[in-house]
Image: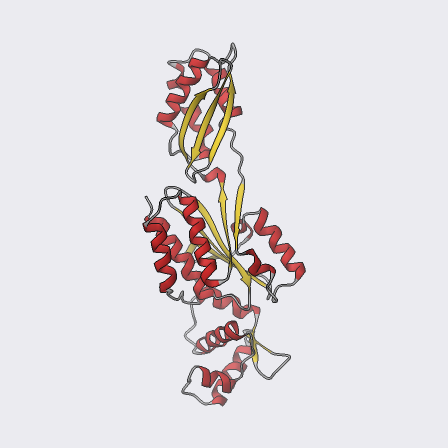
Length: 330
């Protein structure tokens, strides 16, 4: 993260931003002094606020004599704010992970619902299918001419792939291939499977005569995974009803969060945390995205909301807690 400067003015800046997030109202020196019980004179606070304005962190409000945070201030705050503890959130997340009966994917959905319920924010979970791992592969014979290969991935996703038998591809060869794949491909990432199959071809060749046609069948019909991004949006209404986000900006945001990887669209990584990105490109909307991985899943968890009213401290705490619980999963 950006290192906080020793200058005390940044302590005042954080108080100003926190107040504006809470109330949406510009704040003057007298109000700031009273609200935070500051043991300095109002003139000293005015001087500090003037310096912050000169440095580009504050702007004069058009509706009062108070100051409001600038875009530069929000970027600073989002990168430096301490994540505050939330006992209610931690207890509820701990409860669903401790009593987990569902797949890890469904558990994350439950966690996302809890986070949005407590905070009112909009949260997006993104899964890249190509980064999942193969958990099981099974063969079901349908009739003399066809069979179904059933694949289960690390997220709990199930795919059914049909294979047709012919003179080039016999039923017994498919059975042998599936048996070897069960031994060699479990826990291999989907995007590495085709290359792994090529490496184990000598093993298959010992038992399968028409190996080229069998491998071609699997490569084209079974192991032909596409990299698809699946986004799930929780509490979308919070965005839609936000008064701080224009209709034009809302359309742009919805297009992004419904169809794309938000992580990939954000360029700015936090130096001390390669798994965290923050994007504040306008005074309307802010994105905080975290990439979370464990043995089972690779997820992008993103919070999106109005720049001026997002509770950055709660968001960072929620993302850190979710990462902590997921890393404990085996």
